[in-house]
Amino acid sequence: KAGVTQTPRYLIKTRGQQVTLSCSPISGHRSVSWYQQTPGQGLQFLFEYFSETQRNKGNFPGRFSGRQFSNSRSEMNVSTLELGDSALYLCASSRPEQGAYYGYTFGSGTRLTVV
Amino acid sequence: GNSVTQMEGPVTLSEEAFLTINCTYTATGYPSLFWYVQYPGEGLQLLLKATKADDKGSNKGFEATYRKETTSFHLEKGSVQVSDSAVYFCALSDGGGSQGNLIFGKGTKLSVKP
Image (cartoon, rainbow over all chains, first blue to last red; front, side, top):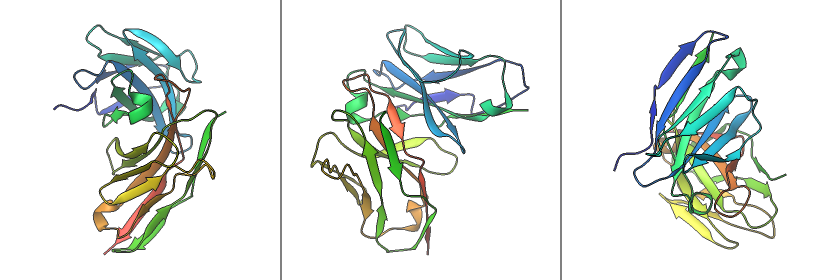
């Protein structure tokens, strides 16, 4: 079966711009989470969506936002990009009642570079 | 708050050597524990998991036992291969219930030489 699909794989943006990343979860997975991975801070939780509602949020500024559609696909948006937003952004999906117990399936990520 | 500490890398081993990557955690309640692996240029893959104390997770020759008394979840493999070269992350589920997000350790880079 198809895995978690993230698009695009690579992105280069300029400071001050905004960016939208997309994630399509595994069929049947209705929970989608986003993580930021950087060499300095490691893997940090951004937010989780279920049934089009954000039900958990990490400690990131309001420039980071997301949404989920009725087909469970999710997007995250970063506005007013800063150099420090350069990172690998990972999306993970699970059946909503199982992720915390049995683990999440991750996509290959979107590599965002801010110049 | 909850946290995960894993041994600093990089770890360099010869093929067929024994591997241990230490992981300890701090948590309230009874989180599930995970090991994820990241190959170069890829996302994370779930390697193994344990959902309660004394559970042993295993996959592809890797093993880890959920030790509540020592708050540890060390990853072991008896004989590593070159193809095991990757970064390994220990993680726990935060928040409890079905809504827990994952808290990760910093990762340990493993290089296996032929």
